[in-house]
Image 1 (cartoon, rainbow, N blue to C red):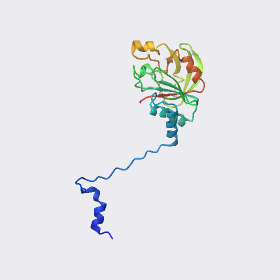
Image 2: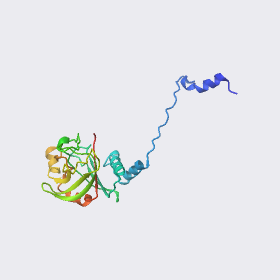
Image 3: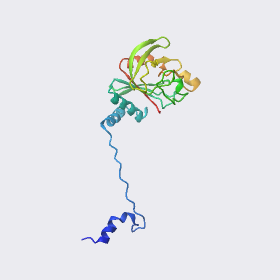
Image 4: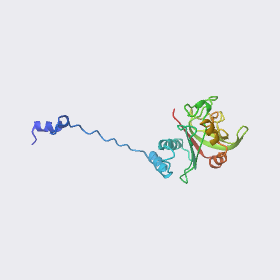
Length: 220
């Protein structure tokens, strides 16, 4: 039978100095983070794609979550990481079936979004800003100004659903090139379109037309 004084001493011993003269402090509870199946699938796919030294894991995971949220799938996912400066190769073309990074290259942002860094975003007509979010890539078109181009269907209301009415398309441009970057320290800027180099535009059409996905990531 344990006497009351001894029992109290045992229960509250953590608040009194120990025999060695040091104050005893209770260990903080361990926090256990349990990921859902979607997050685990994103982590597994990220590892299989070997993107560790290419694209930040949270950016890839954000794009993957958008696909799940809107119930869309595609063989090719393009991710434009607008947290990177425009002189960085911040457009990633990913083959989700073959599980490989097909291409990494430059992509421009809108002139209303900033100079070298894309700092602001808009879905509004006339803003000349980049719109964030997930797009389904549509048909190839012949743009009177830019030549071969791709339609973009914004899937997120209030974020990018005005892409068609704003004529936001993926097209090639002279101002997206190594020579332009060497001269100006950044890519040129579009009126909101995710413009790529003229050199790579045919490849974009082959990979993305009629069913590819584009996710534009940025800080709001």
